[in-house]
Picture 1 (cartoon, one colour):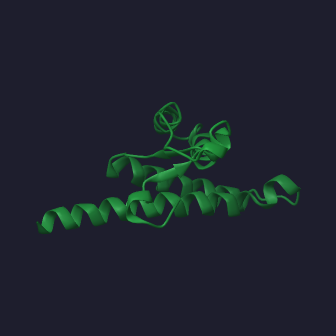
Picture 2 (cartoon, helix red, strand yellow):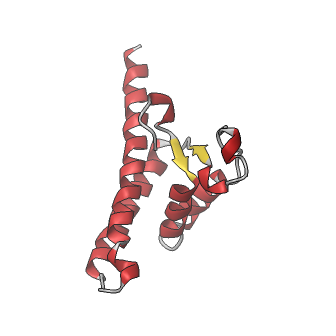
Length: 122
């Protein structure tokens, strides 16, 4: 996710796909909500990247409860991943990947909270 205010709700295709796959077993409804975002029109990109789906970015607009549930569930998955960690190459980096995805969703949660508090002040 990017750092500017308008981009704090923007997720890459890869981040959304990973989130979907991680949440699919524990939170099927939330995972489908994330998957449906992938069927929306991606953000505009430069002409060199038009045919490359890997460069797609999507605006994510979910309610606070959904974002909270996503973060909580990903944290549970992270803890389970650490407990069942084996030495093969695929699972070695799984906790790092999950932590990265949690960080992205946490930025979105903070952005939603900041918007709420700013609107409440007005």
